[in-house]
Image (tube, rainbow, N blue to C red; front, side, top):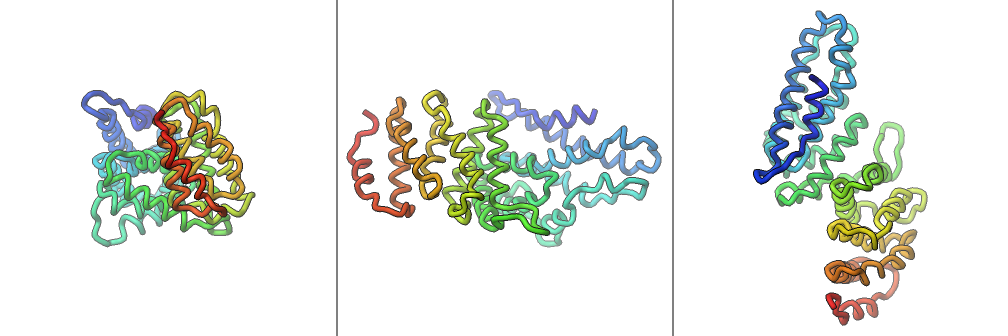
Amino acid sequence: MLNCLLAGLQDYTTDERGDVGSWIRMVCIKGLTDVAIVLLNNGAHIPALPDYFPPSKFHDAIGGTLKQGVERLDNVRQHAGQQILRLLEFQVPDFPGNGQWLIHGDALMRQLFLSGEEISGWHEGSWLFPKAVRLLEIPEYRQKLLSGFVLSVNSRTDSTQRPVSTSLVNYAKSLPTEETAGISYSLPHLAEDLVAQCSRNLGSNAVVIPVLQTFNILLEGDAFESIYEDPAKCQSLKAMYSIAARNVSKINNVQRIGACMRILINMLPIPELRPQCIQKLSEFLAHRYPKIRADAAEYLYLILQTKDLGYDTEEAEDVILETEWYC
């Protein structure tokens, strides 16, 4: 049963009615919470509790629920948030080994969501996301949370997309450039995590495009600026460059091509990557799709106007303006 409920969190079925899989996900979120509370309440009387309810499954359920709690649908976020609050308020009874079923980072979650201040609700993106990005500090749930944030960044709903994007950029800027004692997350680590999500799913546009767009949001917000001058800390940025620059001419999905194009142009201010990015620009400016050519020219012009590349770009800007890119 646990496996079925956990699998239900991955149901993203859509039809003419929309994301009908969200109905399944919400039922599974509540089912997992109910199962956890019932079993843990009776833990002292279940000799083989780790067999019935393995701690790893419990934490998979928490991670999956948190992921739903930061995704794009307001009603799913609200439902997931309610169940997370139920679990935070639930006191695990005293029985041998009960610590295995304690929520990782529960003190941080209580501080963020049960601090006594007025609670607007998890459906309210402007309230939720500035708090929720701090949950990335919890290593055990980080990957699932990051997947949820990536999906929200790519939401078409402004009330979700704008606050999550702003919150992610601000959070990234607040991260140290290296991990030290007591600090388990850093800016290069965040970049590595995004690259890893992309690398594991290079054949899936449904995964790659949202990650590329999230990376673009961070680049546009200068979130990685503090590591631009450090080649060692730029390794993950180089890895993302390699993903974006790979086989551009063979990609047929216009949205993916556009996301790759923006990655390369957004990386022009990075000294370590600028020569490679400039060399690759022609693949977009001379692309077989007129829309890609025009979008690349427009975006390149914007970056040349707003970013300091260390040399005069006036001639390049004139060429961009004088060229008919749709011909």
